[in-house]
Length: 229
Image (cartoon, rainbow, N blue to C red; front, side, top):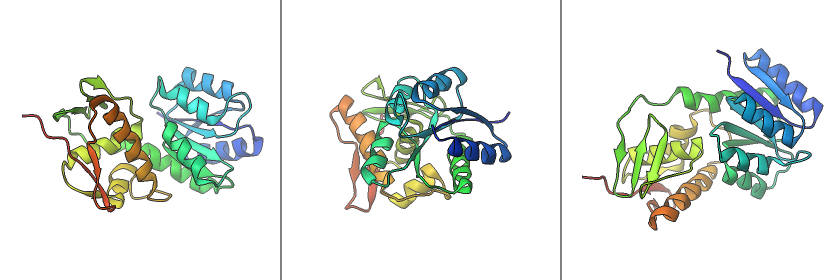
């Protein structure tokens, strides 16, 4: 079955080029031109991935992402005409899985989409639930709990926590985490790891009161929760 990609952008040239290249790559492509239309199509059509412009009429990409994350873990690739790092970080913090700055190469767009969707195909088959003192992770259900409460994690945040937990108390560098979570064909700066670690750490700490993802002398991160007996 063809994966479905929803492109939400008010620029016809962007929509047309993205649609042409993605369809040539074998995807089913839907398009929306405004924020409200994009949000409704995302909820109705349940695409596999959304290519979402940051600046949209009616509702911007940040708000759409935040609303979608209340009820969906769909992959989101955010497009922005801005090069400022704070805009990119803000998009990741509200739940985007990756970003691409305009103008961009259509081939790079397709490569990013393929890389993001590959994360889902490459999920390990390991099915046993991982139990720690404060955190419980179910790889099959793709759910994690802290202090008995469900953690509201994006797909990338869940993958990051799972990678850290599977290497309990071992320091994983940014490069290690990029390889395990994003894959070898990751595009972008390794500082994106810091943003995701900060988000996961904050969500766990809000429920447990514990800092369970520690920085290791600036070279990486380790998960320090104790395995349940």
